Length: 201
Image (tube, rainbow, N blue to C red):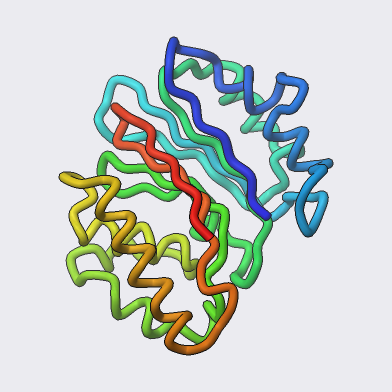
């Protein structure tokens, strides 16, 4: 089970929550109390917003606790809005492109969840991504597909409705194919102004 956190408010150093808190994200990545595994060692990522519209994203495939660059960046970067994620892969390769947060334009997105039968449905899932968004299909996760489908459904103008429609359409694939769980979706996404979060299963 992946884990993530989001902050919006007064500017804070990223390491306040990612590294230094009693239940920091890195602490949870090493000794999670709830989940199928106590380790989240399949990569990590940060996305934060500064003076530009697009987020700055840093991610890698190392366990978060062993990445010295993460420690440097988090201890020197202050932001009023940021997302952080540690990954536990369920079906796809451990690669930088499969790590979260994902981004496109001003949007950042991170997800903890699962589409039932994802590997058997990957081709159909890819077809659902609009042509104008497919150039951003760098990884192989169901998470990235949901995100890009939502972008194509109007994330810019209707960030909640577009995500709801995307999740519903992807869930229908699993339902029609008889794969379970049909959908597990805990996610957070941001345009740099607001943070949206949803949980659905």
